[in-house]
Length: 304
Image (cartoon, rainbow, N blue to C red):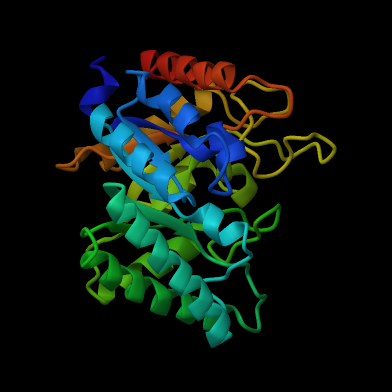
């Protein structure tokens, strides 16, 4: 089997591997340096950096590394409880303005794209209106990103009712939104699907991949715990692979990669980013969690 580097860029989500940086503060430079010095990774996903000087130093570090950079705006929305799909226009606009700021920061940092998530599912009575609001927001973001670095705008598919309870949500809803955006001729839009979310979307790997095929531009590899509500890693917490009670491990990574090959995901001219989204639980060593993820991919690839 050929090396996976022929097919995709292996990345890691900085603010999940080092969650103390998730609010745009903390040891951003020190932890980012850990990643850029690891030649296993050719891509890194960053988020907001509040301090101007730290942001400038991080930009220099990333430029020197030669890594592909992606930008995750999810922390900006989640930590501030912002809703890009709100049916209240003022609420929607606040989230939209935050994501436009994220696009500007992403452009400055040399990122190739910005990822985000929809707001919570408002329930059956307002669900269609929320979808309309989301499509409106995405179209505005695609236009804004087009003139700010020609960035990709990527909607991540989340859980239905475990933790984020997102409007998007089931893969079939993600496909519906993607189809509507395509009709608006926004060629810089794509979906981001995450292995760790399939169990909490109540979907099989195959169903999730095949349902969203043709619209996916970005992949996350992660694990979740959904059967033990008392576990500190319960929900959308991205614990390490192989943890007791976890849903995903080497076999699931292998099956995910196989399904992606089956639908032609890796046939694109530009190699996509496939990133680990893993987070240490309290008391766990982040470096050990990252090493665990690397071993899992190596074993999964060897078994393809």
